[in-house]
Image 1: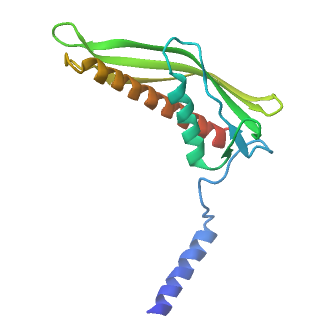
Image 2: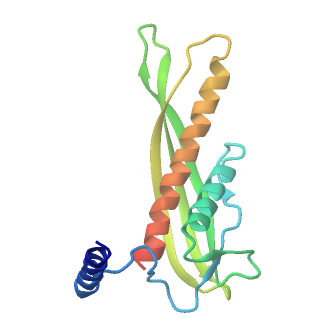
Image 3: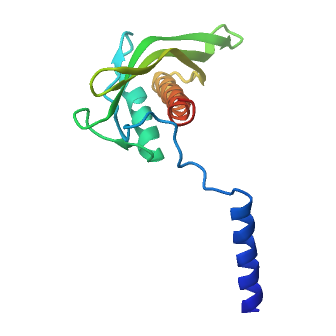
Length: 174
């Protein structure tokens, strides 16, 4: 039985090596010399207080969890990813029978610039946008809190989606 298991294991290894099998998720198409990145707090050109926080956190989390580049302080980084939130708007998209809004759509637009430590621009992504829909609470007592919480959750989702798109570009579409 042990011989049969060894033979099967050896055959599988041979097939995987012979078929060009390789581990995915480790290769990158980064320019040479970039093994670390800094992601400073995004700048905001909109009037939404604290909007830069969920965006910055989303990008930091995306790159920290990926682990193909080290996320470090700006002074130690080979490259710096800077973000500017250009616009953010939300507006009602559906209403109940009385005419009160029950659903809103939030849209954010961000400009990103990846620079080498010396300031040379590696790439720019202008007008990156994402949209998410969130529900409004009709409750008279807790409605404002729930609605604000749903709006914040939509912002977090928008940041995560943008960060995922940029991470993919960073590692696969350079």
